[in-house]
Amino acid sequence: MLLQAADELQVIGLFDALRKKLSNAIKGFAHKEEEELEGSGSKQEEVAAADSPESKKEESALQREEPKKETMNGKKVEAAKNAKDAQHVVELGIATKIKSRFIGSVTLNEKEVDNFVDAIGKSMLESDVSYDTAAYFEQMLKNEVSGRKFSSNGIEEEMLGVVREALEKTLSETKGIDLLQFSKERVSQGMKPVKILFLGPNGTGKTTTIAKLAYMFKSSGIACVMAASDTFRAAAIEQTEFHANKIGVPVIKSTYGADPASIAFDAIAYAKAHGIDIVLIDSAGRQDTNKSLLKEMEKIVRVAKPDITLYVGESISGNAIAKQIMEFSKTIKIDGIILTKLDCDAKGGGAVSISHLTGIPILYFGTGESYDALVRYSPQFVVDSILPEPKAG
Ligand SMILES: Nc1nc2c(ncn2[C@@H]2O[C@H](COP(=O)(O)OP(=O)(O)OP(=O)(O)O)[C@@H](O)[C@H]2O)c(=O)[nH]1
Ligand SMILES: [Mg+2]
Image 1 (cartoon, rainbow, N blue to C red):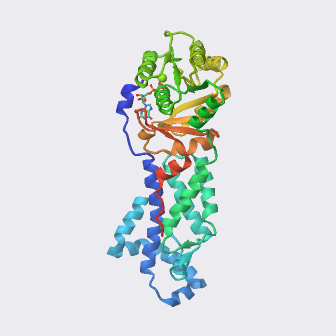
Image 2: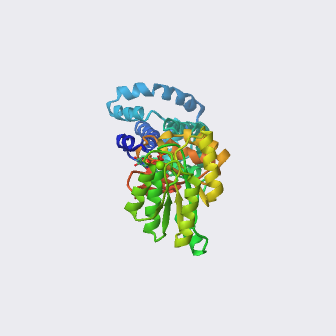
Image 3: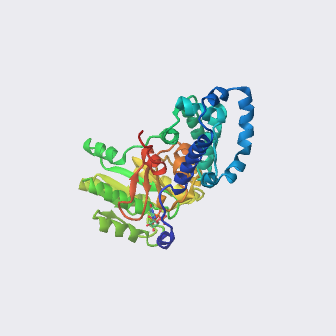
């Protein structure tokens, strides 16, 4: 049990790093563009000149001169500082900037699209989003940005909207079941009890998540029983019992060293005898490398025949979870992921990548230690946590 360890965990804002980095990358882009427009003047001739070969030659020269201009002009120091903080400065070419000023809209050329997409992708990599997922997202973003007309007045807000769309598409690749809905349907069809098995490495939050789900089901009028099938770790049975008593659901237990599969079997029999809708089956923490514990898990699956098997992993483990899940999947079919301790994960990149890497949907996020600290996964929730809604206008 990792009770002390959890006490030491630092609780932070969800997706802190991703939110800051992505917002900065978008702002870096827009502010840079606005600052340049300030200095570009508004002479009509400049529009006509913008596309001329001379202007194109000048364009790169101007860009090279920019740092000097920013240090010379006091007004621009703040913008330069912001851009430095953002670490990414995506620049529009001078021709695009001037055109945007007069035409009222702007379409990015190929280089500008690439610069923008690269900067956003880099922000994702720095927040521990996996390389594959970031590349997939970049392609989505590129498709959205290429050829698109942005209004010159609200480019930052529009860019924000485009990044949100691309992120939502990336996160919508896998679609998990709604556990509550699924269980209600099963129960209404008389197909009960619904059996849900929880597995994963040590200390990730399996038992706590079972308690959270029992609380959720009970609050929705669905009856549960807990199977204290971790007979391996010291105090595991008492921990399950503690939660069951606190929430007010029955628990089926045995002694340490008893066969976890037979406890699951007994809990299912108890549910059938008492008309209980759901059996939540705990298990001892195990690594994908521990062959004997994996064999034990196979036996639990064979005996209990779970309707749903959920992998419980810690968000702070990042993309390493994907590898573990793939290893577990060789032995046991995993239907969904519960990603716990998102509240302690400064980066949050794993939450964006794991489903892309494994093809297995995340069903819930654990966001704290209390029973109600469980958030149903949705791409919208992740997008909203990372990026603000664009302002209308
Ligand atoms: N901050 C935070 N802590 C959590 C969350 N989920 C679980 N915990 C804490 O993590 C610690 C371990 O949780 P357990 O539920 O015992 O984990 P487990 O996977 O059952 O552990 P083993 O049975 O030892 O394998 C506890 O102190 C929980 O309170 C979460 O979403 N956020
Ligand atoms: Mg446990």
